[in-house]
Image (cartoon, helix red, strand yellow):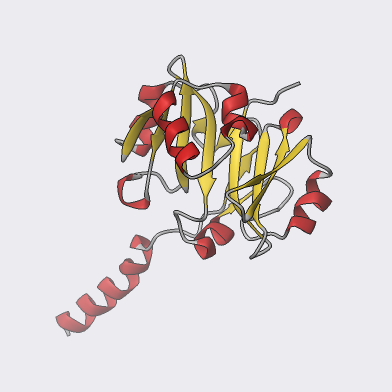
Length: 190
């Protein structure tokens, strides 16, 4: 009898230990939950943990140029930064799909949330913009929700970058998949 109660107790309490299906809102120009544009390096790494890599401006530029990317078309180079922290699922302690975090003067200036580094299905289910737009949305949905971008550029051949400077968001759609795969948040630029 004690064994039956123990099995029932373990079965019932095990559901409380499962990860929640919490949905997080990615706020253009602001951040995501407790990660905010303008926060300090120590506060940021206190939430995400030690990055996989810490790249200087020069090293990041060299890495992207090696991949044949026009860095001056990217919003992070227009904003400016001193270094970037690179995260992968295994070293990111937070629930957010943050791939890169750009810092200037020890303050966070841009967050790159990526469904390439994290599972697209999880990103679709757990993260959304205030309009309801989620990872995986088509380019048609992006422009229906946000209108025509301030700037548009090709990124890594297959990706179309819709930059909404005044809103503080860059939405990167994989053209082959016709799916929103990357969301970048930064302080709005007037």
